[in-house]
Length: 364
Ligand code: CXF
Ligand code: ZN
Image (tube, rainbow, N blue to C red; front, side, top):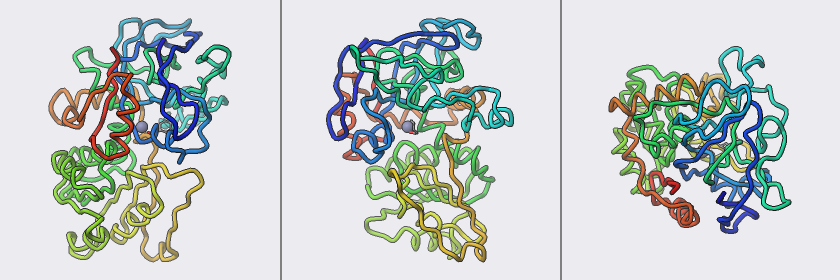
């Protein structure tokens, strides 16, 4: 099958034929329909996530149709449309048991392999790593059964793909992790795919003010379309002062860092009111640290990480699909451009230029 392989950071992806093994017991073979172009893939390409093992097949925000299932698989069957989850969960560890499957600790294999630990992707004799246990910039993927979430057959698969990362991460950070209450004031820093979905989540949660911050005016225009009530260009204005001015000097109840740079994480901390919560959603470069002031006890602020929108995939993915199909989640408008797999390098160049709300690779 054809796949996009990254051999070295800062080099183009190579579209070529690779071998894919499986499905083994407990695994699912999926024909990929669509795969979103996410900043996390780009962080590996540009070298800022230097800890990720190469060579690898990137892509982790995907939808598809089940082609075949391994022994013992009961959750999905051939022909089912699915959204892929980039976390696998064992269903038995303490975290799965208490309802935090996104923090599953039940598998020993590194996250660049399927849980069974055997290499499934190869180019000739060379094993290839699975990014996010998904590797969806390819015609097919083999995933663990827990990563295959069946969805309604009337859901368009290009929009469905986005639920697998940006939508779940952004909406879930608001609704699941922070549990934003109706009437709250919210700020979101960086309005790419995740940030736009923080805005969607804040609208769903009934926030009274949704203040979007970005460096680029085209992204702030996307933010307004997604439901932001105010926008701040942080190239021309100090975002912390501007947020304070918009909230009567107090600061917001919740601020979300959707990019993950230490400076922005700190700005989120400074932008929340005393007793407020800064939620760090974006993932920082390898080795980065976030500076938190020693005044935190007196200000009683909370700094909270949010991974994958604290998702319970089999609960949340179908729920987000329902929200989209009943008009409560305007996801179609965030797909700015569709690309064939052959144009994936152009799709990442557009992401680096900040052009698209979301680009999506659509398989032929
Ligand atoms: C990433 C985290 C690392 C694995 C792939 C997905 N999260 C969001 O983009
Ligand atoms: Zn992603």
